[in-house]
Amino acid sequence: MKVLKCATINGFDSSLVEVEGTFTKGLPSFSIVGLGNSAIQESKERVKSALLTNNYEFPPLKITINLSPSDLQKGGSHFDLPISLLIALQDEKVDIEDYFVFGELGLDGKLKDSTMIFVLALSLKEQGILKKALIPKESIDKLSKIPDIELFAVDSLKDAVEFFKALDKTPYKVEKKALEYQVLHIGDKEYFYDTNYELDFFEIRGQIIAKKAALIASCGNHNLMLEGSPGCGKSMIAKRLQYILPPLSLEDILQKAKIDSLDGKEPDFLPKRVLRSPHHSGTKSSIFGGGSNSAKIGEIALAHNGMLFFDELPHFGRNILEALREPLEDYKILISRVNSKVEYPTKFLFVAALNPCPCGNLLSQTKDCRCSDIEIQRYKNRLSDPLLDRIDLYVKMSEVKSDDKSTLSSSSMHQTVLKAYTRQLMRGQKEQNGKLSDIEIKKYCQLDTQSDEILNKALDSFNLTLRAKNKVLKVARTIADINDCDHIQKEHILEALSFRRRF
Picture 1 (spheres, rainbow, N blue to C red):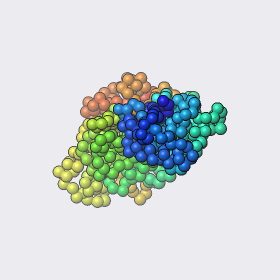
Picture 2 (cartoon, helix red, strand yellow):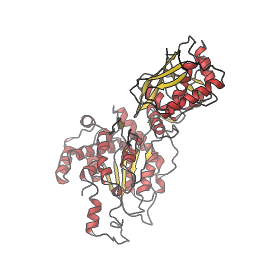
Picture 3 (spheres, rainbow, N blue to C red):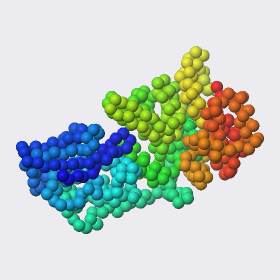
Picture 4 (spheres, rainbow, N blue to C red):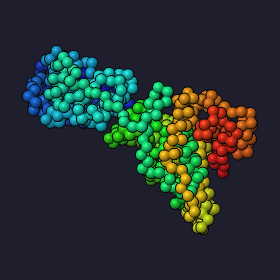
């Protein structure tokens, strides 16, 4: 019995699958067992056609392919190549057990890429399981960016058979490709970023306070809420935030590409953090993940390491807004279904935009508000205090005036973000200020006596919770970083308090 190693998607990660094959005398048959889905069952026809069109014998035996472990649900067309190789190499004495094998077969034996191969290879490498892999040539561009694994590429089933027969594997070896972007060196690690600002903050007139809040949010990964009349620039600020977010390490870029692949998209490997902006009419399952039988990834998890933007926040369903509290606090979400339980990481910058009232004119100096007091109160009551308590920065935006000027540009703001990000990592932090744990807050957000007194007075005056106190400390730490200060000072605490929502 020969065994080849492959893998299958299991929630956010992948699980090792051993593809076993036996060939016994009896009525000729070909069966695949081990809880394979329809894509795997259909591979029997692709494998038969690929073998016969390439002059390989399809043995008149009872062929049984087992996908082990047999109690794990498996899926994907990438099992075609290992199954066909077990049949083609059944009588050959070759070493095949050291390699993982992935690839979809065409009817003519041509190997094709599939969206899941990158996810499988990256996840297995992160688990320390994958060392060597045989892949289709179509997969080279994506998989060659994964470090610390040996890749060998072939173009067809025939080439794959010759690969295992060959003593010298060098001709099949894939050269690794380095990322060619702007690089920021922090310690002994490289971080990549892009200077192409498709949307620029310079296009926004006025709104100096909102821009400052956006800068602080980007520097420290702080949750941001923008409230204002329609047309004042809330969505413009949110959409431009994506271009000034901190740089990405190679691991972050690969993780972003993994999430893109799970979402069914081709990864671009750009050093630009993702922006997810679901519509308020979206279902809870589409935003948080789920499904009837298996847990599927949702918008919350797709925004990991990036930014999640909720426009028209009060129009989202109450159940969605309340369920948002867990991923904002714990940076993870558990999706439970009868057949699966999957935990997704959810560490993202949350940005929300809302009008001050249903008609939007409550803060306007030129238009009359058409809403009654009851309608305004009902509108505001859609946002609970526990949810609002998880917002670090709140800005009430004014209307744009004719004499407002354009001030900060995305380029200058991004440079400030890079400096603040460098300062945080050089201080020994593993996370940005906005995502520090309670223990890390005590270590990195220490106050002098005067600043501590001001914060304690604010706790009583504004009825701040302990969570809100920690939010103020983290925002003050980021403001100090922006001003190149080693310690949090009184003015940093006061500015951080000015961004708290107080009603």
